[in-house]
Length: 191
Image (tube, rainbow, N blue to C red; front, side, top):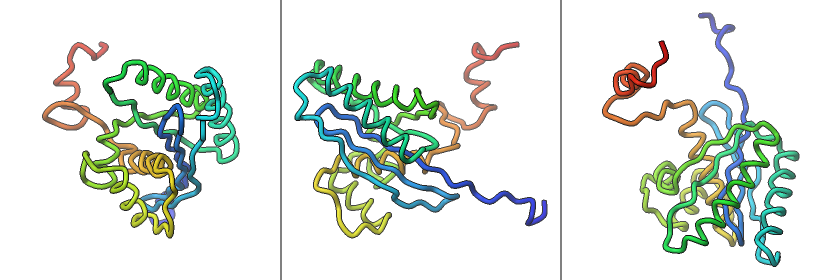
């Protein structure tokens, strides 16, 4: 293959979402090959809305607005983690679902990452604190100042996690690749 035939890395925009029912973080990064930089990040304040239904409506409207403004190629979300309060978990899952629906309405692919996976990808420690994640992002993106609400940096971390893992085959089991997948899952192969 000649140098002219080698493809230049395509620029991509990744939207990261840290779901929440009082504050939802969002972060957009631009990637090109292994390079990445911050495009925008912030939070959607939802405490002022009285009902859960109105909060869900605002999440859909605001995420749709972000999508329409920045035209991301993909969305990455942090998966809700199981807590002691089932009602909170249910509300958080609904908030995540509404954000997903906004992306799906614009035909944007979605990937979900566990909080531990996001922290591990960004800091090397799956049990890192929000502050440790924010400090690492400040270094990685050369940010001069961190936002007051760490939900925004959590969303940036989700987007960066997706960049680090995009295109990698996620496997379970002892081996990697299609060969081991077929060996470990013979009942899933159509003949």
